[in-house]
Image 1: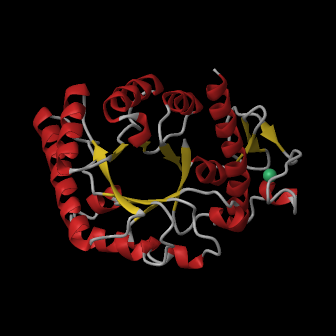
Image 2 (image 1 turned 180 degrees about the horizontal axis):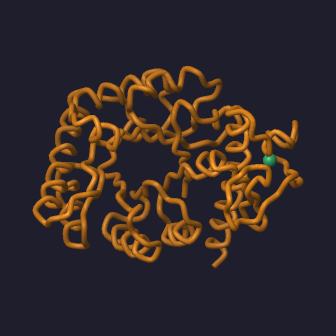
Amino acid sequence: MDFYISWSHSDARFSDYFEYCPTLVSAVNRNKNVFKKLTNYPSKLIIDSGAVYYSRKGRNKLKEIFEMQLSLIESMPETTPIKIVHLDEPLLNRNTLSERYESVERTLFNALEHMNLFERNGLDKNVSLMGVIQGFDFPSIKYSIHELKKMGYKHFGLGSMLDKSPKEQIEYITYVSNIVGPENLHIFGVTGLEQIKEMASLGVESFDSSRPSMAAVYFQIMYSEPFRTYLISSTRVNKTQEKIDKPLSCDCPICIVNPDEIINTTHRSFTKKRSIHNYYHLVKEIEKIKSSVEIC
Ligand SMILES: [Zn+2]
């Protein structure tokens, strides 16, 4: 199971610190030159459509999105596995049944258009398409999968999970995994360890999360063995979370140089270093979860 760091132009350059660093990036304007800044390219890529961004902008130019996705991967080596995701219509704020059906149908329409553009462009073998499974209940999800398969999709991504409880998320992941096969399934935007454990035991192909960066922005420092998160005590954030004022012993690429940097809250450059440190520990925890599942 691969963990993709959900990444944008303003985040730390994870792939410059970690050799194996699958990355998810959105095809939005501000990310346009994002890979040109890197010394090492990510080992695997998912190019998302930037659905939330485009729905906010009130525009739906599928060809424009597709071209942006192509320009992002232009400089990538032909050996990098890349998956391109079509535009989906978020279900959030769709309250009536007919509004929801409309979203599902529009997402399927986008999937078909993207497949047409993809086939017309005759891309290299390392590039494939990912269909976004959408639905508001099990039958609509099943329908969505059925239609995507008919269009020729072989890789699938499940999104729109943020409004669901961890228990519901696990139910949906298990349901979808049983239909499409866990080896063909990516889960978008996962934050909880509980869900990660379940996905590992199902054998889900991959998931993405921005948690290392988000935690860093909120002055949180992660450690593994055992996995825990502390709040930097010098900040005024009034959480009940346990606080620390000194960095603990750590072998991450930042702390082996200067551990005090991860606890520094004076500049954005330290936030980025904190996110590198957090990534290191989250990856360690994910690896531990994976190996404990394999032993079972
Ligand atoms: Zn560290």
